Amino acid sequence: MQCQQSLRNLYRTLGFLVGLSVGLFVCLAQQTAWSEESVATRPNIVLIVSDDQAWTDYGFMGHPHLKTPHLDRLAADSLTFRRGYVPSSLCCPSLATILTGRYPHDHKITSNDPPTVPELSGKAFQESEAFRSGRDRMNQHMKAVATLPGVLKSHGYLTLQTGKFWQGHYSHGGFTHGMTRGDRHGDDGLQIGRKTLQPIEEFIDMATEQKNPWMVWYAPMLPHDPHNPPKKYLDRTKPLTSSETIAKYWANVEWFDQTVGDLLGMLESKGLEKDTLVVYVTDNGWIQDPVQSRYAAKSKQSPYEGGVRTPIMLRWPGKISAQDSSDFAHSIDLMPTVLKAIGIPSPKDLPGIDLLDTEARASRKIVFGECFTHNANNLDVPKENLRWRWAIRENWKLIVPNPSIEKDGVVELYDLAADPQEELNLATTHPKVAQELAVAIDQWWPECSPSH
Image (cartoon, helix red, strand yellow):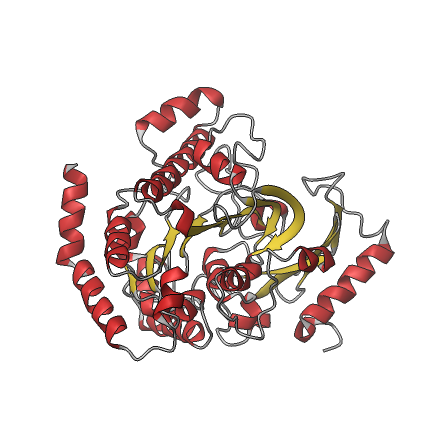
């Protein structure tokens, strides 16, 4: 309780609650195009984004050791896609895709950070003018496109950013309220989940009292490192593995699961469960190195399943039927799906589909993605940061390297049904399949095709 009280005082000192009041006044004072009736009947939205979590690391996905009862319950109550994907296995571009409904090469936020400066590294680089100006350029890319929070704001929603957000001030993402004011990726928001959920509860209470529909962006830095879970979680996972680093990662996963339970329990206790659309996705995967405190190969920052695959869930009691789906789902689909579900038009040029439309899901035969350098080479030309493009059709997955960056890379083809670990490259034994998928990839992003 002392920790929560001190954090509450901190947020007040920083003007968090003042921001809520000012933002509310502005929203009420604006001349709006929506009707009071339509606003009153629209659902609330909670978008849960886990951070650095493997698609396998859930009870409902069959993990032999992890206990994730709250995420398991969410999956059981949701339209759950076990073959969900994000286009990029890096935090910043993936989160930007979730917010905009666009591929990284379209929204142009391809990397976590601006180009490096040879004579600067670490903190010195992050405090340099080159870093600040580079981040500002990345923020401009976000401000140049429509975002889900921004569209919701224009239709009467109050929207709160908590946790990870890379594009400077929360308003750059279209949020009406938030906790990131310009730091690299979070400011006070990084305390969400790890320390408290109180700012979320205060926001929900304020919006509910004012009869405004609301959206919460819950993107805690969990199970992302530091892997420093509370003792009770580590005490449970340590006996399950001989690797201390894996035990700590598993404990962080279970810690994150509990925060999801606390958040969903908050909705239930306030009688808001049936009036709230809950969406779940992971920003990118993570396979824990058993020796070092880092990710293993074929996970984060890679085009393999361990980097780009995630379960995707949609829960709205009484509106969305709970079921498992074997169809593809993609993070580019979240913005058009949410907007269609609540009766708000989407921007016309979004590449995703409405995941509640069974015909659209059945007609989509292929999904695409792209992975880029951690630090951009060119903030305005995505192809100069490209490492790999990938595509999946049925169980066939093709990975195409960019030879200018992945100089030793080869074209890789995998049968995910027979080889889920992506160990046996079939590109030379199934050249027709590889060629068909390569053509599809070039048609999807023509600027990077060899003939361009």
